[in-house]
Amino acid sequence: SANEDEIGLNEHYNRIALLASTLKAEELLTLDADTILRRLFWEEQITRFEPDAPSFACSCSRERVGNMLRGLGVDEIDSILAERGDVNVGCEFCGAQYDFDPVDAAHLFTEQGRQLPPASTLQ
Image 1 (cartoon, rainbow, N blue to C red):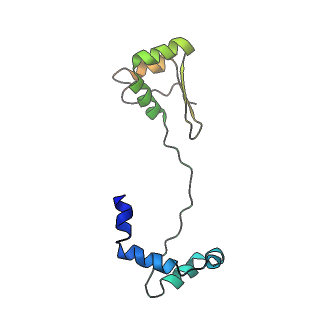
Image 2 (cartoon, one colour):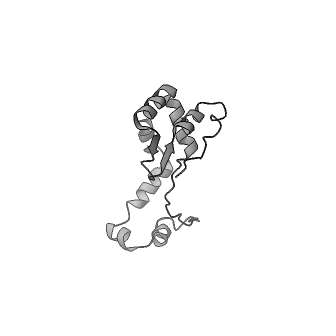
Image 3 (cartoon, rainbow, N blue to C red):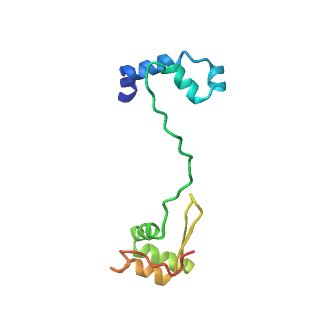
């Protein structure tokens, strides 16, 4: 790809790759990050930022699920309601469940419901 071709032409990347190639596997396994950085970039002033711990966050919400259901259309939602009695959507990422009974589902397709789905059956 174009980006991969450009990497070889980037002088900074090439310099870092050359410096990194001087490290032995044992050093990578035994030395802490600060020591490695000092050894590689001893001629430069480096700033090492504190690491951020990864965190679990899901962006699902009743409003977003309501928007998705609106996208399916009123006929599809009516078909689901006729078959099951309510519409249940589960988030595959965080496991949250969103239930829309016939009143909630009908509200999705009103002008007022386009703003924010009701929370009458929040779980």
